[in-house]
Image (cartoon, rainbow, N blue to C red; front, side, top):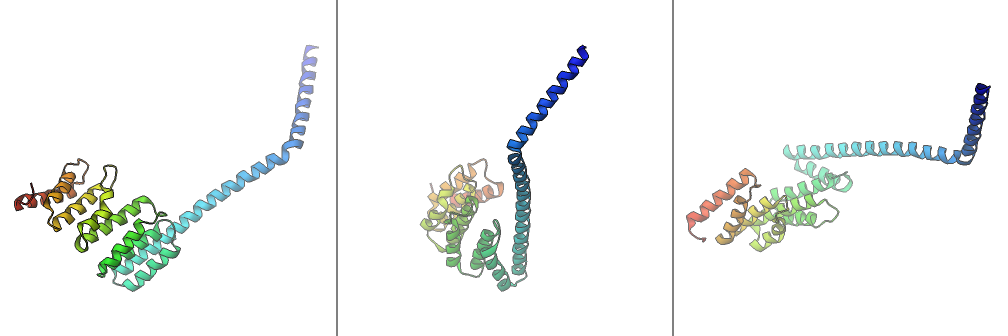
Length: 223
């Protein structure tokens, strides 16, 4: 008898659960189906977007390498055209890289003022990642060592010399070189000592700084 009662209770319980599930499904079934569809579509969209990004980035990378190859093979006009096209319709970081290579070409062709202006424009473009903007600023500063005043170089490089900047070592070097070129040996010594006194300075850069310090010491023109 007890077994019959237990069996009856289980049947009733299962029936109640079945009724509850039917009621829940009637009430929320469409919502659940809609959520499942959205989840599937979202996954498909995410995978599709990532594939598109990888494809576009790969294509832009191939175009950039092709432009560099053309320039290396002395087909500069064709290379410059490809870089100009990448600046307009490239993907990811490649439009900026194309701008920077185009600016370097200006310097290589003797247009230092145009190159400095191009790099300065990149450095001021807020849509570009900060690391690339800093690199452009530093490149402009190096070009200005030969063509500008110490103040011109300082305007580009000095803000990169703070201890938190990854480019502080090169920024200090370019400022030291500019000061040395303009005969300000005391200031040059300060910048080169900042390099040799920084334990994180790259060895080759620290070695160059030490050579400059030796030259300054030999000249006897700085205290």
